[in-house]
Image 1 (cartoon, rainbow over the protein chains, first blue to last red):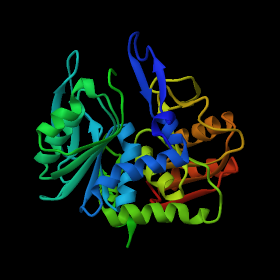
Image 2: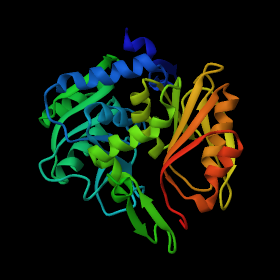
Image 3: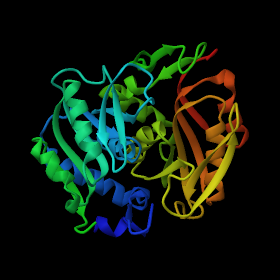
Length: 175
Length: 175
């Protein structure tokens, strides 16, 4: 099975000139979804992972499945103001302006090994902020795993520069 | 294990007089998360489920895990304007105003058996809209499963009135 065959390409979304990679078609296919989860956890065979952290919202789908596969807990990293209890927050730059992600202050016990999961890594803004947030919470960030990498945008390289091993299943050079 | 022990209660959130039931503490606990998924799928033993549909955003976490457990595909039901391809939409009333959820027009093949999953059912606004949306898409809605039921708000009863069997793991009479 070629996972890339299950990813839908939508030209000019969300704006002209952008090619959007739609993973919902992969998630909807039972065999492709299971295969993606298996391949994401394969490099971690034998490693102890206490928790999986996923970024809102598509990272929740994949993160829930990966946490289940690893028999780990799941930690949601959410946009500002969405978590009901006390949080840590990290801001990160967008093309215009900035955004923030938050995590509950008690989501992690010091030293727990956490896997960060998201559907796609591009410039890595969210992922780098997530690593910062997890480390603030006392986590050892064991690895980061993505279905899709857009390598020309450099996000995976930024994560490796932070000593986070990166797995990605489908790569689109050129975007 | 008592799953209710893993649900955090936050008084006066999001506004005074409301008691918020926070499932993130349950999701973060590996054993409680796995137990919840096991109990949610237990009534479906032997039933064929083609796809699990989850509502944005906490329903994605649980839905991803349940889909993985059932070796089913996953369908995201999202807020207006979040899905990149052509959608069906269903509007539903809120306390003030209305909201809508959307599903990709090709997420379901006619006759597929779908399980709807969310963290909590209260008045059932989202869940009833989800059932309507799934049926518009040609699904047979096999069941709906929730971690938490607030039975006094009547949502589970509304779903049963639509011939959808309902499972809920923790019930809070009185809210």
